[in-house]
Structure formats: structure tokens, C-alpha cells
Image (cartoon, rainbow, N blue to C red; front, side):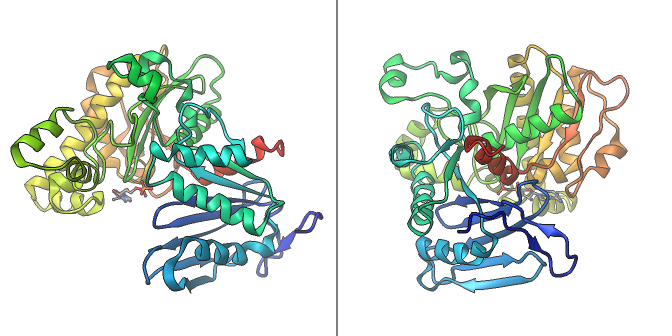
Length: 409
Ligand code: ADP
């Protein structure tokens, strides 16, 4: 890589773009999402390698001038996919790489530059995130092998929640399990909760004490109480299964469900784990899909299970937000984000209806308009709190934290 500051000209507009870009990598067990983001965050190239591990593995890439490419990955290996992604992006001379890493345990409360110790820790923490951390580590090693001189940073999904006090992060179980086995609540989606809460404080110019409840409602769902920029409590726990009802995950159930299902149906722990993670939530109740759009359409056509799935989803979000509000010394407002939070006005309205005792008033027209990536508030005059829709931007947050960790910003 050259030391000079590269400036690239877009073929159509001639405007300079992608100055000192950061490469953001999200290496999962069967996919790799990537984004190349310019220093001023105004321009990006994005892409996705999917079906990894299968013969159908391919990269879907959009070039700077909007051209769509599809590249096959024979054999579907992660390393080969990463080599091809890096080859596609090499011409843009990225200056740093930021990796989304799911679990940072209790060791990491912010993004850190990768060295051998950090890489070993990411691998060791696989005990807490068996599906994710090994894939994240693979991404770090693949970049290191090709570009040993480019600094890499890991941005942990759990780090933002390390400010939670013990009253929020401990489970009421024997303390040896915490002290010796690190069994505690960690929380996830930290990058998204950090981004939208910071953005809400920025837009509202909140100078005094301010507390937001951030509701990240996508395929995975979680809610967080953020006070003056710090997470004080969140709905996900030791694993991302705790908390809200999600696309295919159950969220909270009676912990004795496991022993009951074992005794009654002879199910193994692995079978119960798969059922709660992959066959429950919106999918399990509707019997149709984990996609809210499909369920909303069926509900409108009178499908009773689809109607119940939506009602349960909203009731559980509302109930959780109400309880999380107890963590906030001041309750400024609620921020909705994620695919559902950003797009389904009816879901937002139903959730707020569950919280009707809070003196919340919202403007139905403004709520309806806030879809498809729009950002804005929709509380009505006299509302006890503010209501915001803020599209999340985890890539941008990871790029920002990567530059901060390297002292580039
Ligand atoms: P992930 O957690 O995988 O990143 P997303 O944040 O993209 O997921 O959210 C996916 C969810 O958002 C799906 O349930 C999908 O149905 C829902 N969603 C996306 N667009 C809409 C829409 N226009 N109306 C209702 N739900 C939507």
C-alpha cells in the first residue's frame, strides 16, 4: 500500500470519493458483510459473501459507480471469499480494517487494536459465542496474512454494555458461577444501541442529563436503557436469546422449560436450544415466517396465528421497555431502529399502546411517514417523552470506533 493519500474520481460525477477509507468486516459463520467507508463517512462501497461452506457460495458486490457484480467462490471457503473481497477492494487503498466481533467478554469495554494477545482473546471467548467468534478470528487472520502492515481493530458487540452496574448484569444464582465461570449478562447489538443513542443526543442537542430507551427491532431484537451515553441495562443476557421475542428466537421463557421438555418429551438440551433459537419467536407463533412483512400481510387477511404473533411481539416489547425505564434516572424518549423499528409504523403504534400509562402521545401521520430509511421524531404536543425513528448504521459506527482506536480521529 502506498503512503500517499489516495483520492479516487468517480467516473460519472468526477467528485473525489473514498478518501482514507476504512474497511469494515463482519465475518459470520456462513456470510461476510463488508463496507468500505470514506474518512468523512459520506461514501461507501458495500457487499456480501453468502452461502459460505456451500457450493453455491458467491460474492454480491456493488462498485463505486453502482455496477453490480456476482463472483462465485468455488468450494465456498471463508479464506477464499476474503481473498476475493480484499482483491476487489485493494484499488481503494484502505488505511485500516475494523472487525465486528460478537463477544468481548468482560475484558473489553471498547474497541481495541489487534495484536497477538487480542486475537488469542477473541478465540478464547468462543466459549461464550461458539458460532461467531471463530469466524470473526478467521477474518482477522486472513487480513493479517495478506496485509500485515494495515492496522486492524476489533469492535465488540458486547463492549457498549460494559457500563451496566452489577445490579443489572448479575443473575440471581450462586456467586461462584459468576466469579469462576463468568456467568453474567453481557448484552449484544452494542454497536447499534451506541450509534442510535449518540445520534439521538446529537440531533436533540441534549446537553443536560438524558436517558433513551433504544429498541433495535430486526431479525434479532433487543432494547437498552442508555443514560448520558452509557448503557445501564439491556434485554439480551449471557447469550442473545434472552429478552424480547425475535424473528426465530423465543426471548424470555421459564428457565424450567428445559427440564420440563426433557422429562415430558425426552428432548435433548441441543434440541431445545435449536427450538428456542431457530423455531420460535414470530416464526414459532405464526407458523408462517420470521419475516414481519409476510406475517403482517397474513394478519390483514385474517390469519389468527399471524395476528397473535404480532400482538405478542408488541406486548413483549412494550412490557420490556416499561421495565427498562426503571434503569433511567431521566426518561427523555424512545428510539426505534432495525428493519422492523425503521419500517413498521403499525408495530411502533401497537408497542406505544402497550405503554399507554406513560402519558405518551404520538402523531399518527408523522409515525406513518417515518419508513424506508427516514429519520425523525413523531411525538405529539403534550407527550411525556420524545419518540424517534433513527435508522441504525452499524458499519459507520464500527468505522468511527476503528479510527478512534487508532488515533486517526
Ligand atoms: P437483521 O437483524 O437480520 O439485520 P433487519 O434489521 O434487516 O434484520 O430486520 C429484518 C426484519 O425487518 C424482518 O422481520 C422484516 O420483515 C422487517 N422489515 C423490513 N422491512 C419491513 C417493512 N417495510 N415492514 C415491516 N417489516 C419490515
